[in-house]
Amino acid sequence: MQNWINFPKTMVFLPLSLCLIWFFIIQNNQPEAHLSPDSQEYLYLAHNIVHHQEFSMGKHGTESFIPDLSRTPIYPLFLSPFLLLPSHWQIQAIILTQIILFGFTIVLFHKSMGLLNFDARTNKWTTTLFGISPVFIVFTNEVLSESLYIFLLVCGFYYFLKYLKFKKPVFLISAAILIGLSVLCRPIGLGIVGVGLLILLIRKEFIRLLLYLTFVAITISPWIIRNYNLTGSPMLSTKLSTSLLYQTARKIENINNNTSIDYKFNASLDWSDPKSHLIFEEYAFESAFEVISNHPKSFLQIVITNLFKFFGQPMKAQIKKHSNWNTPMVYVIIILQVIYLLALYTLIFFGIRNRKRRALILSMILCILYFAIVSSPFEVNARFRIPAMIFMLTMAGIGISNLQGKIHLNRRSFRSSE
Image 1: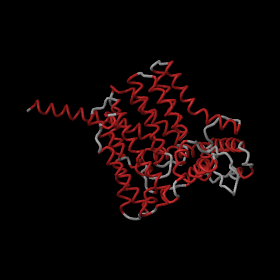
Image 2 (image 1 turned 90 degrees about the horizontal axis):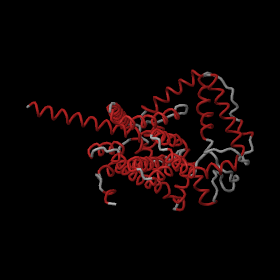
Image 3 (image 1 turned 180 degrees about the vertical axis):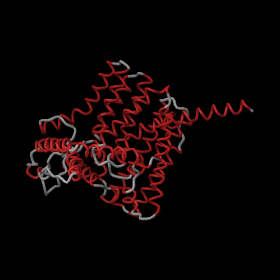
Image 4 (image 1 turned 45 degrees about the vertical axis):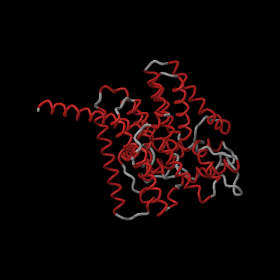
């Protein structure tokens, strides 16, 4: 227990202070900015879990509670207890809890860096960079799954590193369960399961690999079975194909002044039958794929643009939405974000050059590229960068360690020359 409370408190208090300052800015200027269309969907699901024991976005008295297949259960379940509070306290309580959760995430990230044998100073700077990341501060203040997802992902990362260091199966099982829960929070996390599998495969730990896969499967299979029973198809959610249709395919058609997709196809379906979700998913995916196949250059243009946004786009619309500012202060915050990203990528550049940590660096690059490539077909903004930031900042930590080593050598050389 002493080990858990023995860390520089400023690494947590500074980021939490920034989160609270941003919380009060939103409360003072635009309280409804804590919510987005995605937030409303999560809240509908949580409301129906609490009051009707249904995982549905249906509204009581206006439509039946059709089982929802577009979302996964973990974040709505997280929100559910807050909907038992008086309505005027619910959103504030959710955001303040997410801020506290972010504090625990910072501590776990700090402990993870310690498992990578970073010295105390490197660990402190890396964790501070993690905590003051603008995307974490801004999206912690929205009713979105990012805060919980990052907490679960960092927990899984911590226990996986702990397993690699101490070889105890209980740590691998914990990592597998937490990574499985992160997948049920945001299905994009499924690729991280594959990265863990690849690491164990390279290390030729085949029995432990099976143990890892077993507990990931135990965690996510109840949800997949539920969806299979409803539709006859094993799936996590239908969000991917719907996004491909309405974001990617529609954008390609707008670029080429062409319309070949019936975007009103969903109106012809009987949505009281859960299998309609599967019919629409198949139609959406096939239609989007046909448009992409007919216009590969437009698709490539979208992917390249979105990769740039993924790695380099600062938040502007989000800042304006939260603050309701139309002043130079918005541009000051944008400039600070650009400086942060430039510092981050500079440190990553120095980190990549570390040959002693080649396996770790390759693992981190694989995770970053996974999130970037999977996100690239969609309408990307800074929010998509959030899960990759864990791995970017780990690489930045290696860069800080390298720079400190060079500074130390230069100082020794300077003193010896005197």
